[in-house]
Image (cartoon, rainbow, N blue to C red; front, side, top):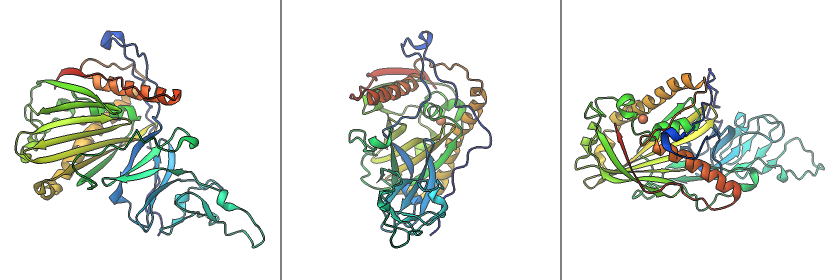
Length: 381
Ligand SMILES: [Fe+2]
């Protein structure tokens, strides 16, 4: 079967990577003075919904600026190879995948799922070339709860995933896959997408839709935060200003929101006996492009029946975030110094601190120390 996926095209216009964020004493009383734009490595990134990669198919994608060929063999196993033939550098995705091995379109070199070369058709009988030592880089991948994750190591020698930094799971769903998925591309550096999605005070301005906001006026919110593995958790609480869409769940909705590195947000909402969870994962494609995937898990048959209505609403919600990022890029071209104010931007500040600490700990070969402490945050939204 020929490859089904298209190669990722760079956007027609060239937005700036965006200004780095400076934490100044005026706003947050912190000693961190700048955060350079960099991709976090030695972590698992969301690669794609598993259901979109059928057995015998392969899809070309870019992660952190690296071309990757994701493939699912006929027996269902997912694997990932660097999408470049080591012979002449042509993308392997220009060739074909027979459900077991990848064949380069240029000279027919073949590679198995580990990236090992298995055939060079041009060799004649007495040319005893040990081609099995020719390899394409293989990326560790895992399929969990319907999702494919890829491990992006700092270098080729460190491509064994750390067992401590595991893939985040939705509780109580076992290995059930998602019920609904929406993917969007934001034309920005990953940090702007992450900070935008965890920002608690943009909702009245960006998500001002009748089906989302119950009241037009701003109300004060008080939330308790705790450190959690490689991130922080907004402690479980009753939702005061219940979004209209949540009324279909019945009961009094409660929620907790967990953020973990590199860029995964999980909201676990319970109402009555039911649970609805939202996993939003942010994956850097390049320095100017970021993929955002929102997945919903639920245990209510009613929501499954309402899926044709919910899907466009989730898409509209994500597009609202994407549209504001496109506008933001217009300003970031001029490299302005940005601000983080308390308490509305404290989560964004934690994100930058977590990311910097993880990178430093990796560099120094020491354990990660979570910089987040238990804290009460207040804002109006
Ligand atoms: Fe948003």
